[in-house]
Structures are given as structure tokens and as C-alpha cells.
Length: 491
Image 1 (cartoon, rainbow, N blue to C red):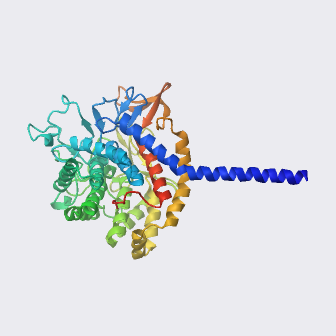
Image 2 (image 1 turned 180 degrees about the horizontal axis):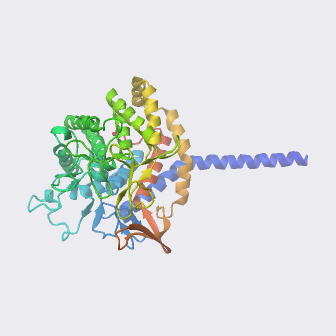
Image 3 (image 1 turned 60 degrees about the vertical axis):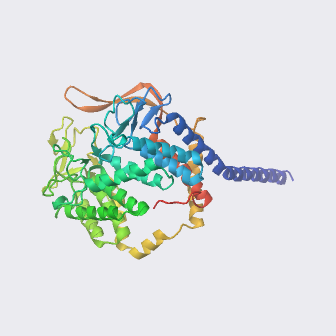
């Protein structure tokens, strides 16, 4: 009898624990909704400056406030992997919930970008709101004076990310300032694209193209060109711009034309007028690249899925053959490739910390990736899958509306991550990390190294982590609901 009583007690405890688990699961969507409000509220109301953002902050928002490198004042915000991506996160929260404060925060970020748009139609890496520091930079504001600091950059997804965010924002707001910024940006893309000779269809790294240096060269470095293509396709999809669709397809012809001949059937980072690999920075030699070529392959696979042009798939196949011959380490499931290969010999190229070109990899600078996987194995697996697939079936599956079952499965998969995020969020809605101070320093010989001070730590918050976590929470809410609250207008 005692054993039976004990067993009943254990069953009762089990039922209570099961009930608590069900209750926690039922509460999780509301907890995620509240966590999203706290996170975005703090970022929009406390962290934002003029509606914009930088890369990283100390929690007091003043001791450390950085874009790409040095500390900057509150009058400066960052475009490159900064304000546009945070604005996109606000839009994701708005789509998931329909709550207006998220749209208001996204609009503030959009107006920040519209203010900092250059007369040339694009953006530099940062935007300055101090009138003493930005005189004449943003010539579109009043149409007077001389436009200086007027160079649009397509490097690092800079102008492209700002334009894509504004295109998406423009679908949800009726705002003349945003619409005008979109029009200026698209005009910039169309004007900057080369229309003659072997460069036809390509974009330079910067516009107007400089007369000195490598900024005028057609550039694949950091996926510059593929980000332009994606932006033009988004404009075609959201704004019905046939001219942007034509521009994207013209650029894809440049991809095919600029693929190097056998046996080095990959791409360079940038090209001269004869479509030969060209120099860029002092550590970016004329070479076939194991890094950017993978990004080119992924874009061409995307375009094959979208347009069904077999030439895109064939070009990737040729590059895959080169990758299989050019692996320098790892194994067939996780290979290592060099960033640069010498034209002709296909030998890996490197630099010393004092930037001497060499075949040796023993004294590499710390600020650049000279060896990596670069996502090549995933790309090759994707190529093999697409090569064997029925394209019409793939396209039909892609265009099919999502089922309730797929949403439910995603919600179940995301739930543990959501619980972990909510558990690590503080009362203000932040995800704080205590990290040692780190500086990039240069010695007397010009060598760059990272210097870490373990005795001097700071509580820090990061824009990229905020964006990543907000997207998880928003995706979870969309999955739980079986779709977004606000109709999805983005492809």
C-alpha cells in the first residue's frame, strides 16, 4: 500500500510539472511579445541618436560608442551595418505584431538615412548631424552650395542596405521624404552602372568613380556587385521598376563575362579594362579569389532558381571544379581555401604584416581573412542539389503559401532559443556583455595587431546582436500566429 501511495504521489508531481510546462509554453508568446517591446523600446528611445545607430555601445552610451573603429560623438551615426539593419529589425517587429511604435522607430531610422543621403544619391559610411562638420555634404537638403564629401560607396553593402531598407519602409508609410530618398537612390544605381565595353553592366566600388586608385573598377570585393543586383531586384519586385530589373540582368551578363578562363574558372575581386585581375588595396593583389568567388556562385545559384537560365548554373559548375582542385587544407566536408591565388600558377598568395607579397602564410596581418572556408562547402552542396533538382518543381514549392504545419514546426524549433534570449535579457530589455577593452594598434614598422586589456572591462551592447535577437523573437511570434500580423509585402 505504501509503494502504491508513493507511486501515486510521483504521478501527481509529474502531472503538476507537466501542467507547469504547458503553462510556460502557453505564456511564452506573450513573454516574447513583452521582451520584444522592451528591447525595441530601449533601442529606439535610449540608444538611437537622430533616429540612427552605430555598431557598439557601452551601457552608459558614452564611454564607448563606435562605428567601424574609433569612438565617435552622438552627432554621428553609422550606415555600414548600422542604421539600415536596425531599421529592418524594427520593420520585422512591426510585421510580426502590428504595433505602431515599431513602425515609428523604423520611420525615424529612415528619415535619418534620408537626411544623410549624398547629392550623388547614395551614402558614405556615416552620417554627421553636427552642422559645423557636415557643411555642404548633404546637398539635396536645400539645393544650394557646393556638394563636398559627395562620394557614394557601394562597398560593404553600404548604399545597397540603406536603399533596400528604404524600399521596404516605403511600402508601409506614406511619407514624401522617404519616397524622395528612394527615387534618388535608385537613380544613383542606374546612373552609376557602366554601360559600355567589357565593363557593361558592372558597378564601380564608388560613385562618381574616382580618377585615381581602384574605386572606379568593377568590384566583387565584399560582395559589392551581388548586393547591387539584390537591391535592383527588390526595386523591381516592390516598386515595379522594369529599369531596375534590366539593370540586374545586365550585371549578370558581366558576371558571366568576367569569369576567368580555364583552368582558373573563378573571379577576381576587381578588374581592369581588359577584364584582367587588378590591384586594390596594398594587401589585395591581382588574383583569382577563393572568397568573393563563393559569393558570386551563391548569387548565380539564386538567379538560376529565379530566372531558370542554365548559363548561371553552368558558370557555378566551372567554379566548383576549380574549388575542388584548389583546396589548401581541411577535408571534403570542411575545406580551407586561400583568399588569393596567383593568376597562371594558381599558387596561394599572402602578405606579411609589413605587406610584402609572399607565397608563405607564416606572418599574416590580423585584420584580413587570407585563409578560410568562406562557405564554399555549403555552396558546393547547394550546387549539387540544384544540378539534380527539377527546377519547375523547386519554383512551385517556393511560391506555395506556407502551411500551418510548417509555422507550428518553426515555433517549436525556435522556442528554446526564445526562452534563452528572454532569460538573458535585463530589466531594460538589453543583452549586455562584459568584455575587455580591445584596440587595434600599429607599431613603428606599420604592423597592425589587436591589443586586449583584460584588466579593463566594460558592459557593452551591440547593434548586430540586437538585430539578431529581435529577428528571432519576431520570427517566433510570426510562427506562433501562423503568419505576420501585417501582410508580408517583401519577397
